[in-house]
Length: 383
Image (cartoon, rainbow, N blue to C red; front, side, top):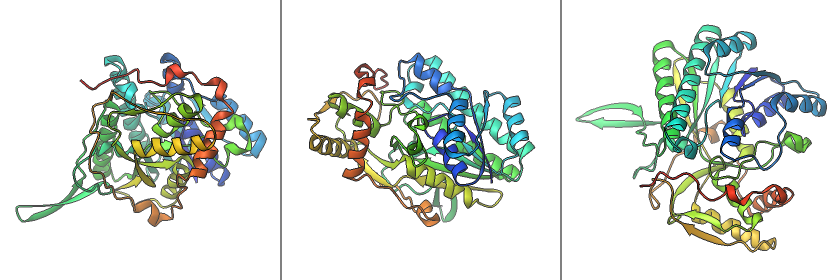
């Protein structure tokens, strides 16, 4: 397949580019370094040093003898998007090109507007470039489980059948986003569903839970190929933050009561899920929604597990409950379905003690680069 990855420099984008290239596909990766810029502006730099996208592709070519076509440009500019589609002629578009941080989107009006403008413009441009330059293509869009919120009913995979006054129909599952970032993801889904209905697009929307992990099979070839691993309060996901805090001797920061439950998955499983979706496209005129996670944990569960493994490695890990900076339920029901990707063949990498120990040991190699000032929450939206 010809695979076009929008946001190809990101925590998920770069590993995805290598993964598809290693699987024998022709890969194009596009980015404008927006996330790197925002990380610099907020003092939220990644733990490991990461070469730029062109240099990463050069190193990967040198190590693996495989090409990744790199283009640098702002995909919120339609001319850039259309030109890339026309050149790449993709069979599959993997759409990661969005501002990915809930805390960043809640800093203030400027950051909210950037998030809204970038995320929706890129999605709209992707839709129209597909219609005009690659009408048979399959858009694989990264959504988020955060679209659903934490309803007091089971969460289905994207759709819900409703019976009302004796009649039945199927609707998108009700969404209740907890940040402006998550709200843009809800709007993405609505945009895609509209163009699927009207123009017959072929779309898979992957509702992904928080991802953890420092490496993939491809980055194991050379540490210069590692993903952009963030541990800060703005761009770092929960498990990744806890791993670094354990190594740095900073108490694991449990927000509020710690009963918040989410569905998590290993970075290696993100690659597996995206590949499975790409290899099994839906029919034209179908919006397929898949809930992308492998296990559910509460914040307290994860803190206890990281502490237990860290203590076993001699790290003396502490846990500290702090005031919750976010507007969210701290104790709630959470039972989401996630059979779709398993039906496609997903073989999960579960969060075992050995996996936690392996990640902690890798973080220890970069201990001197940890800045504890980036860990405690700097953004608050809980009134």
